[in-house]
Image (cartoon, rainbow, N blue to C red; front, side, top):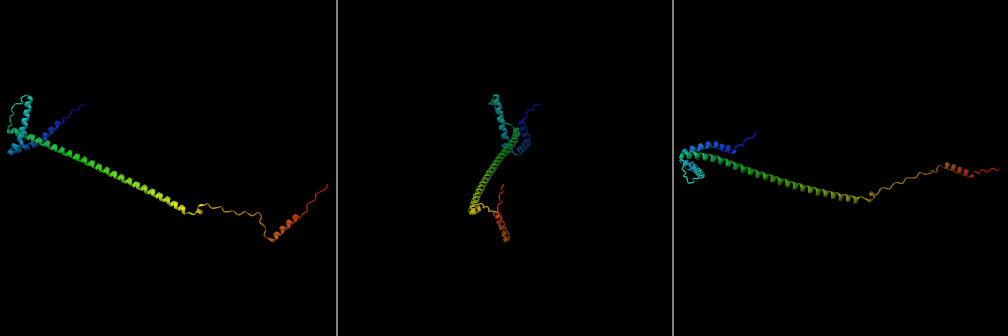
Length: 207
């Protein structure tokens, strides 16, 4: 299915003419009431447009020397009112377009400035965090150095005997045969030893 192209220009022109009708009617009414408005505001644009239109047409037809007659007051007021009505509508539209364009540009510039400010803020925040990280690292390194120095001082203050291992304690040997301390037992022991030493050896038998 083929969709016909929409004549946007014709639709826009028709919309302008439709909106300009009330403005044209107001201009006609004011031209009827005021001779100054009619003679110096409404009729001159109509006569100028009529003269240019006739000149272009006669030039295209090959008779550029043709005489251009002026419009009568009624036609001049009619054409002048239509021209002024449409001109006001187009001017209003142009003002609106310029205003919207200017506002859009200002909004874009404001957005760009805000984005730039946010970037600058993020950059400054990153710099601040980086500086804080460096400060923390420096503080940790200084604390580590202080702890090492404190450990060395503690090691120097400890006595050397505390650092040497303790010698093992000697164990007392068990006595082989403790001598009796009782006098009677000692006498009996002496007699026993004497009797054993004085016993004669048994003679050998003679065959």
